[in-house]
Length: 438
Image 1: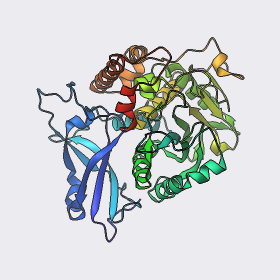
Image 2 (image 1 turned 180 degrees about the vertical axis):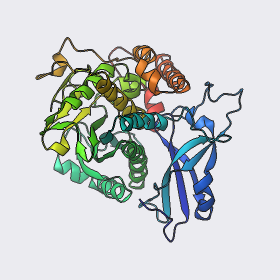
Image 3 (image 1 turned 30 degrees about the vertical axis):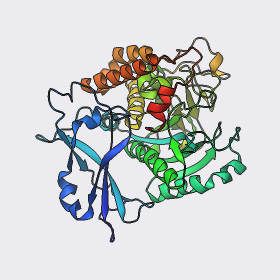
């Protein structure tokens, strides 16, 4: 990060995450920065009412009756970063505020994460998060992979795509998003990138900007990148795994000599308790729900286990600083602020109420019959979401209504297309709506 505009800067990008966790904003001349740094710029409040195609509909916050008035997006101090794939360009993450009273915008998803992190701080904890994101690199003309067959972890496949994945790793690290590793995943054209753990808010900002950066860098190298959850019926879906731990006084309180501590167990209990209730945050559209199939390394229930990739929640033990909990149900297109914020709130609820995680799963999590299944349809996820006290406590009512309204619209788009079938076939309407947008 940098504090002032470097010499030679001609453009500043003001970025903020929208309702769907897509980076949006404005670009301005560098000579406007001094004024804008303090006051921000105006955008229509439809920013937080748009679907992924930029279509809008009436919501309690923004509608045709109130004329979709302005909100301001204001640069957050200390968040300037050089854009290494655009000479002379810097970018900053922004916060949103109302124009008149400068109050936080109630439907800005980032505020949900800030609320969860503040609750952790009130309990004396710092939240650390690392993320793993999967995506496809496709031919922009055919919108299909250029390679064939599965070569997960294959070094030859990695070298084949190093012309684009290499710049993604290196440029994102220069951009302030520390990439640890990358590898080919379980489908042609699919890759996974692990981002270094950091504080939860920065981790979510980095996930938002990483998806933005991957799409821009891939396009410069003649590829189309997509974080659509399930672009192809016959191939693996793309996930968004969240690794999390709580720290106090520089020590990982999830660790008890390298084993999961009692605090960690209670946090785990909260994650399990609320996992199904938060399904609309982890799989926010019908296509994301299609990932939830047995034996696909996407969880179908709220099982937990030790270093077990068939369960919903995986515990990793070892070095004290590395003890953590990984929740594996998120889809690659999930809003990072809502996904991470919801999980933190769930875990903290487990600590506050002393929730026991129950018995661990030692074998195949898909074969467990007494664990709570996760919703696999949008209507089921909405029902759980609207009934959840945790959701009502964490999210502003207008944000809840907006998220539910969008989810219902997406469900209707797919169901009314006439293409949906019981075999979980990805429909053309899903490809048209999600592949380019995400």
